[in-house]
Image (cartoon, rainbow, N blue to C red):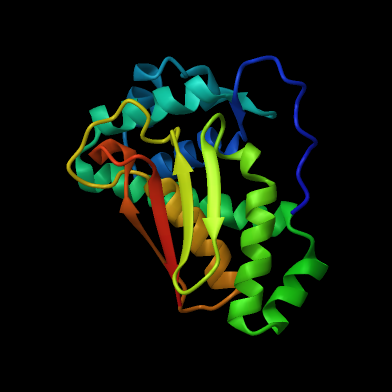
Length: 201
């Protein structure tokens, strides 16, 4: 993946702007209350001027909290899934070199998945913020994000990190197998020590 170099360590965690931009797009595409959600998060300015660089992790956390507070469970989940898929589409179009994509598509699913997972891990700083990323190859593949920003401070009886599910699923369906599926099997919002995503195909 071709991403900008990490920013100097200022002690403030940052996340790529897709976590803001694609949520706005998903809300608008579903005729959701984008203005209300972004106002509740204190981020109304991003609707008229989307961020062009890494954003504060706290802004992503605030947007996710506002989304869950404003929408019901099904609607918030749908918006986050769509936003994640849109993020995957952006990465495929702009960030992941076309030559690398061709190589991954030519490989059998298992080695392609291992290579893609390695690349995702190398760029975890762009989407996990101060969260701690880990991954484990196998069937299923397991991706773990401890102190996950999309559910930080949340309490729920169900997994809420649909944004990551959508992004991982789009990448793995496109580059590994069209049968790839992603399920969050543990979530910090439910009291788990970390959010765990299983990827199968």
